[in-house]
Image (cartoon, rainbow, N blue to C red; front, top):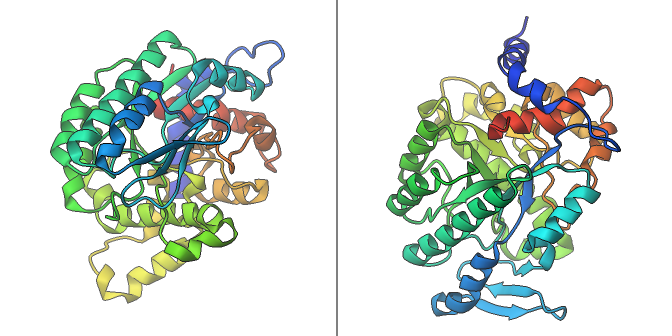
Length: 363
């Protein structure tokens, strides 16, 4: 029996009690019980208001769209505007769309501009506003939301300070990080104290793209999204693998958006590079040995490609996450998962319900 297969079966056995609770009775009119979207975006009203009132003093250019939606036109170092429509702010609209999408629970997280662009003290203030509002949403709707923790990663001491506080808040189940911190890769030693505390607190890292690399070249043909975001996941995963983070913190769980981006599909090149590059002589095992250290969402927009990823990493590492309501979101994820070829109903339940529940510790 292969190591991956053995690990896969072990993971299923170890989580059987929790998984049984998620795949229980299916509500009337629904296809699956407890469908969980681990990658859904929300800007708390408190965060938006603080950004509008105080952000301009730190270089943020704020405005409104023609529809009257809040708009971050730019922040220092940012390359994209951030539109904040009502269905990314108002919980009643979010709950309505959840019903339309057959989703029972969201793990709430922000998208750009996040909090790294400004001085660390204001980044901390923004993080506190986000985390407190997120916890309040979880208290109000404990069966519908769990939260992810925002941290001012431009200052690791402040980040740990806020992590210790926010980890005690109700409903907070993961740490939300960009795939680079102001242009720095995630293996940089200044971030390791945060990883150490994350591992000790048993909180997974949920990674997300922020201002993909590529500069002016990415502005053509929507490439900043179709190519840039998956590239960022590849940078992040390779940085964590080759930079020793996953070896130093063997119990640290990491969620990769966009189905891992380029990382799983370039794994042959990454393995081969370890054998030929002096820059990688420190590596003691191939990059492919780390494939199952990550969790991957379903954002491939190709059922065939997602099936190939499942065959590569195991169905227990695939977590239902959609990037909703962004333009490249998987809008009807239950429909999409049902089109993946060759899966049993139990395996579809794992993706839609059990795997995100296990990662986020939802009973």
